[in-house]
Length: 292
Image (cartoon, rainbow, N blue to C red; front, side, top):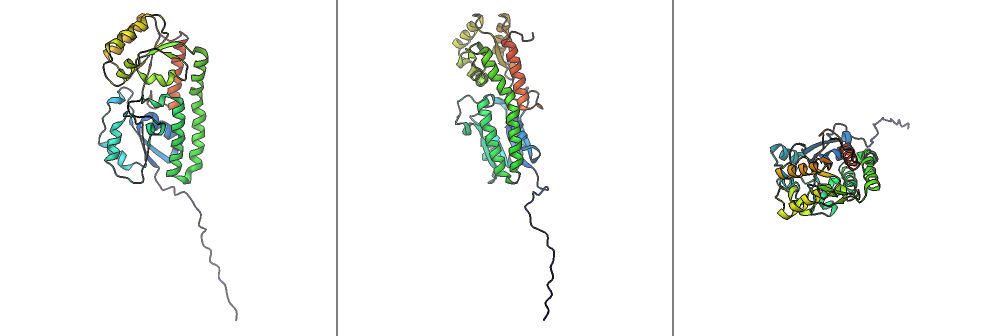
């Protein structure tokens, strides 16, 4: 008996990325974290940064219905934590999405409410955060792990320019006395080896929108009049009669004054270009070559 065997060609089953799947929906509390995660995620993510206005004080932000909707749809939420964006905690608690991943930067770094929350100004903290971002994106989207790792390494290399500039400032100007109206600058002054002499009580109060103790105001003014302070750094996004008075006093003493911001400036710039531009201004001021 003759048996006829018929072979039917069937398509091979291979693991392929479904290009019809939408990018990961990511919400970042602030655009500095949003910009960093977007550089790792590239075309595989869509990032919505809540706080991005360079002319507003992030500490005073109030969320709205658009923010709530974005949180509801997000696969991944990144918050600064430590009380800086507590509105985000409220939106998270009001939204139920069991498979959503959340990165609380303060928790990752072992910081808490009451600590200086301006973590993105610390180069070592930034390196820790982007490493966690890469891990989280891979966990959420393992099929594109190689893509995320490649972009993460590119980001690391790109960040090295501004971080190396901090080391250069330390070599040239380590020990130089500087002043700042807010504690946001602490995270740059420390690795740059600068002696930040401003009263901590003054800096912390201004950062939180409070009136600093009168004794700290007098101390700060005396420091600026002493001739020892070489540069004053102020936050462009926190303008009060007191900070304007401090700036004027510094200018009267021929102390170079430079401004920094809490959020990306300009908003469309990359995190590393933003940081680098501020450090160039600082370096010029320390060299007594600051414009104006």
